[in-house]
Image (cartoon, rainbow, N blue to C red; front, side, top):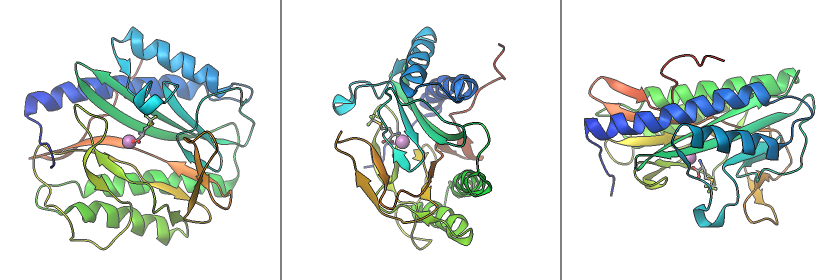
Length: 254
Ligand code: MF3
Ligand code: CO
């Protein structure tokens, strides 16, 4: 069952989403060679709480940290730890914040210093595919129009969509119906309606489409160790089109 939100609930979700966006902006400044992923986790945890939010991921099914930090071939759910970023890495950072009972969920893949042209292209394509998917999040479209748009952008660029990982509805819980695959024919699945709130999240690689789960039972990497990227926004379907909720209201002063 897809839970539609009232306008007021969407405003509440936008406030959670704003903290998510600001957290990702703060982290962007720290993503540099030598910084550990555990260090990024600490910064994010403190920032989220200073804004009155709760890091949604911490304790979720026993997850031990406040963010996911997944370097290079790792796609999602990397547990922050002693790994120190190296020049040329890419790092996917996923942030969830609960504020006043609602969740915002967003992810971004950052370059660490100078990265290879191919890695740059992967990030660019993943971000473009996210916005192509968001563009389809409109009343009257069907769910798989989002999926199809993401797949088209990704595969036209010669990259692969990971089949085993999906986007999701989001609201009072981080994971609600529906699941949103990042591939498939258009025109299938539920009709999109006003008030639906979706975490749209292409996860793509420069190589194989399949993934492996590591021994920590969380982190997931491409099976061929090819570079991966992950971009995610929480989006509300409104009468005026898609509204990105995980956006900073104003540029952060620092
Ligand atoms: N954004 C991720 C997702 O949609 C975050 C889950 S990490 C977890 O699944 F640790 F909380 F599971
Ligand atoms: Co998500």
